[in-house]
Image 1 (cartoon, rainbow, N blue to C red):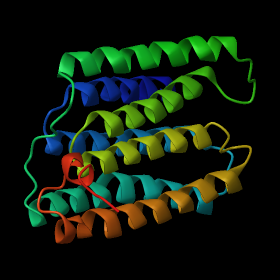
Image 2: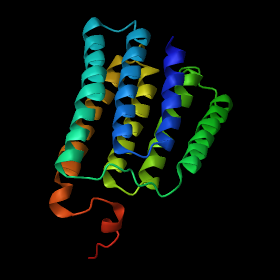
Image 3: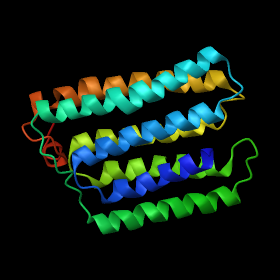
Image 4: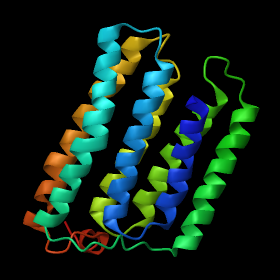
Length: 209
């Protein structure tokens, strides 16, 4: 069942590549949070109940509900247009993310790491590089934040792979997830409209010393 959820997570990355609306990005992120909740519930069977509850609450409340609602609030408050404004056509983005997944699959077969399951390696690194691709291939700064959140999901999946053996590492990753997300969302996104009238990368490219 865990493998099915991780495969669906990977498919959501492909759908992310062809998405053109900001609300679609938010829905995909919320859906990924729900998938991570399922993976955590099934996979983390050898950790303490308190740690498990903490992790499950983080995924279902923070990733699935709180962050998507806050992102939607930021879009409405700052009157950001609902289009993602990609530099490349959706079909090209789909091909690139597909290539990313294939490359990570090839790397997983080339690397012998008995501590980490291959499917975790593939899905985690696919999320990492897909998130980075979203950051560099979209004009709007808010989509860069969403790409960063996808990267965080990849880190979370990688920590889940060793969660049973090193629960403290998983908890540390979750606390870092909290800190960085609130820092980026609360300061960067919520205040960007106070500085720039149009929150996209063209404005940043005009900055001078």
